[in-house]
Image (cartoon, rainbow, N blue to C red; front, side):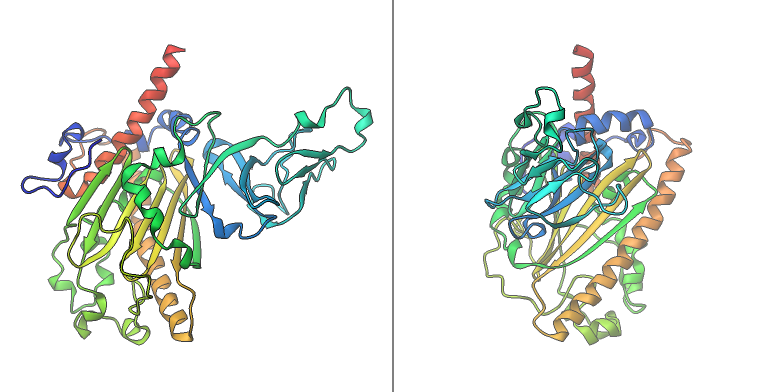
Amino acid sequence: MALYPKPAEGSWTEHYPDLGTGVVSFEDCISPEFYADEREAIFKRAWLNVGRVEDVPRNGRYFTKEIEVADTSIIVVRDMRGRIRAFHNLCRHRGNKLLWNDFPGEEVRGSARQFTCKYHAWRYGLDGACTFVQQEGEFFGLDRSDYGLVPVHCEVWAGFVFVNLAKEPAQSLREFLGPMITPLEGYPFDRLTERYDFRADIGCNWKIFSDAFQEYYHVPVLHSQEATPAARPKVTGFEAPYYRLDGPHRLVSISSVPRRLWPADYQYPIEIATRSGLFGPWNEPDLGDDLPGTNPGGVKDWVTDNFQIFPNMEILIMSNGWYYLYRYWPTSYNTHRYEGTLFFPPAERASDRAAQECAVVMFKEFALQDAGMLVGTQQALESRAVQDDFPLNDQELLVRHFHKSVGDWVEDHRNARQEV
């Protein structure tokens, strides 16, 4: 799909004619059959972000990731030569889950020089090779070199660790990310290492929650509490100044006068006290004047770039020197696990930490408002009182594109299956 500049006239949607402007169906959010195909078509074929290099900062560090939508658990480890690798979390002897602590379904992290199975003590090096078999002479012609851990394709881009569960990915990670996303590799993500992690199990389809962060049409209504009583009467709507699509990926940028310049009666006392709020700390770190990949539309008074990386990753880069990371992991056709992480530069003083904590608390309130609304959305859609007659406006361009991209991947999978 081509990249378009800001349109001189007409709507954003009209500049992507293959999307159309008609009504849409959200059957892809309520159909167990569609979900079954989606798992195979997307989550077992696309590149999936599972962490950052800071999660495995030294040789021997590892973490596990449960990917229920693909019926697997993986190990991500930095081996003794410093290479980041990924393997299926499964012992080659009898299929026991290799790394877990008290509960097999919970993710773990730690340090090791080798991995030992809890069941029969088979051992594996950090490169995946089987290094020890208990009572090896009892087996029949066993060659340990044939029984290493099952590798998972793993690549790193801009410090983000991605895996691909396909036997052979259709594209390299850089090819998959494409020309809209890859310019961000020069952004100083590695300097924003103070992080706050959240996760929640949400009673709605993963795409419904993702949709909420792809448009700002809802913000003045659903999030009116974020405006002070003095500001609310004057908040009548919002319109983002820049949209862009590239392959299955999407971008929306927003602009605003910096919060610190708003009139005092438009700010809550906690914002003034901590010099922070929903849009982050007011004291901006010095990240340099050149922030590659950001604000590609040249938006005046730019505040945020919202990069939606297909299928389930979202990076929101804030102009005042921090960023969010969202991920949506399906657990059934009508539930998913939401992960949110906020990244800041390391706090140098107590006031920095207070500013970060204020931003985090307001972020959680913002996300909870969405989560509460979208559980109701799921329940209403499942009534099927309306099935394929939902109108979307121009600000919901990314929603329209997202569902079309998902549908295209599923259709391709179904066609390939029929040919076989």
